[in-house]
Image (cartoon, rainbow, N blue to C red; front, side):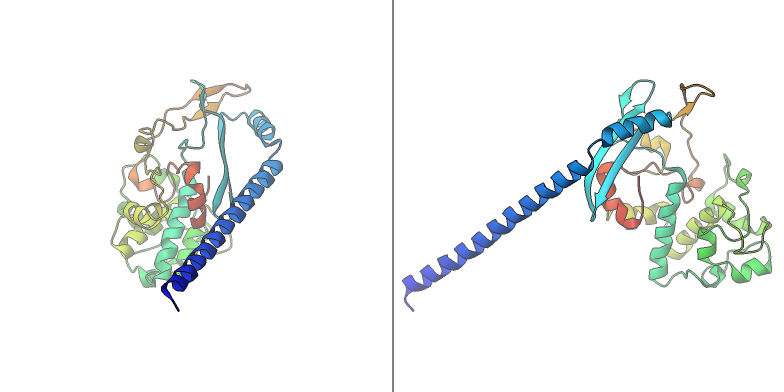
Length: 289
């Protein structure tokens, strides 16, 4: 084969590949635009619906994110992130998520289960001998799944941790004083302290604090750079939500001061959540909002 023939053959090959890539890009572009039109059609009237929701629930503001196949296809804020100053709620507004923080504790625990450091259904004391419950029946049977499913038979005891200065380890050591009110696995009894204990279990089995583990294993891989652990961190962001409380028997609202949550609370609740612009990545861990 002559040099000219080889050159012509190579050019033809490059042209075919370039044409194939161009066609693929065009098809993808048409597909994306078609999907955008389809989503826009399905969301006709949605803004009016959300405006009515704000009125019906007398809510200052709401952020909405819609994810399809791990892709954020819609993100919008409605109402106000600061009702008093009439500052708009946006797709980047940070808000507290309270007990939705428990999702991160469960996901973190699940990662350690996958690594063989914990088990969902064997007694948790087999993995963590230092954990102690009220009696032998609980010690011999309570599993990680029981603790995260609120089915240990132990009720809330929230006065122990609320506004207290107890460290996570100290709360972990107080489990042995919590007398059960119901038999195990027969009644749903919400319990924040079990999630605090699960957070400490994560620390014991990973060698890192709960905050370090969650940031390194969840936040950073998902690029959740705006998610924080405390109110003091959250309010440093200019676009953060301000809490209000409904005035009794009126449609008015009273501004609330932000609670500076102690660090002992985080495994069970207090994360200010990532912005809606990150929700397409966040949804893969089972989180929301």
